[in-house]
Length: 299
Image: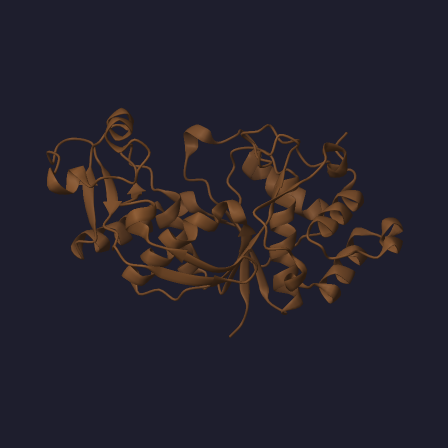
């Protein structure tokens, strides 16, 4: 089987050190396996998009020597296809409409999984509604290449989850499953902040008869307060003028033990060394690791 991996950022802000970790790990895993590495921009939520972010992604990756294969794909160009898949799930009776407000959900659930209210009390057909997947109450496992065996029960862990929102925007879960299938993604390497989302994707893959990729979730970088580096925690954007120190810091974070001599090397030479010495088994099975602000080389 030919290896096909991908990096799939959302344009809610500029790429930061945490983004570099995900991009670099997925790139190195693909290239070390002589595979294809794709770039997909997950622009499904226009109200949350940062102006210019999508255009900046290719420039940022190129500054770090991370060249993708083929054309860049945009989820916003596949909305018609997502609707077709939703119609299929409706025909299979795997989804139902839900018009519960966020306040109602909070009052009823108290932090517990969704109680299935709208499955028992369907909303009027003319009222705006989300679509929820009917989950099965069964224990399952999957093997993560870094984090090990994961146990889950969707019904008790999260309940019936939304795949299209009440405002008619498609949820990440549906789009990512359809896209990974269309692009024949064989391996997914990403941050462990998405580890708990994987069972939802596995379930959708089963309902749609799709193949299941191999998953590997790297530890996420955290600030001194223990918060994951993200746009929401105001993570500093990558410095495109100084890619070398940031690449080396990322390799150290991923426990790849980069050769000290690489500090004077070019970006291409660093990546070539990293491909030849890539060892995903060296990455610790931990949910998060603190990265000091100065280590990101942004100051």
